[in-house]
Amino acid sequence: QGKYTAILTEVNGRVATITLNRPEALNALNSTLVSELIEAALGFDADPNIGAIVLTGSERAFAAGADIKEMGSLSYSDMLLGGPFPSWEGFERLRTPVIAAVSGYALGGGCELAMMCDIILAADNAKFGQPEINLGTLPGFGGSQRLPRAVGKYKAAELVLTGRQMGAEEAERSGLVSRVVPAAELLEEARKVAQTIAEKSLPALYVAKAALQAAQETPLAEGLKFERQAFAASFATEDQKEGMRAFAEKRAADFSHR
Ligand code: CAA
Image (cartoon, rainbow, N blue to C red):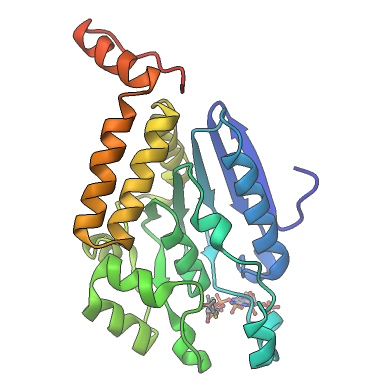
């Protein structure tokens, strides 16, 4: 808690919440915020008592992008050497499911950060976009790759090449967002989804998330092979036995996360 300056963290039962907290800059992602975010997320990921993470911002902004003032004057070499940002790899490889709860602006790096999460819930005032083209550059945190996978090549091209913002309804219609809720209910809804997930078997969640990631990253035959092996392997867990026994006994499963 006290050790962070640009984020807030909170734990409720098996659900952790990370709140981006640079209100003066609409949660622009500067080096401090990004390293704190990754450190906190990796900490929760390593804790078996955490079954889901909610990532959110303020009502006005999830995040308005990478911090333009911090990076504006950097050179090609600066950026090639890593720029102001630590690698996102740690965040992209989290095993714990992450739900982005997006209210207000999710632009540039903010939209890309939401897309690194497993589920995106949007408030009705959410605005998504990749405006980097207006700055003479292009998405740098994965947007040119994840947005086409999420919304299709043609809509992604329109957004990336024009820099236009898209509202919550359009984002839901396009498949970027799983659900739109009133802004005042966003965090509560996101925590409900996280709570539902966190009650499941943690080993099953890890493998299900890995299979969903394989769907984005591998050819179909590879992904199917991964799934077949992972499905068989899940039968080695206590939770698979408990889950199927509970079904047969018509009672709720009591997972031990083993
Ligand atoms: N970086 C740094 N500061 C930012 C910022 C950003 N990405 N976005 C907003 N801010 C700051 C503003 O400079 C302003 O600070 P001051 O009060 O000190 O001037 C403060 O946040 C509030 O912003 P505005 O006054 O601009 O608020 P607004 O309501 O008039 O406009 C906005 C909101 C449309 C989101 C506008 O702030 C904006 O266009 N922001 C930049 C969006 C953008 O271009 N994002 C992409 C960044 S590049 C990137 O992300 C690269 C990548 O892919 C990795």
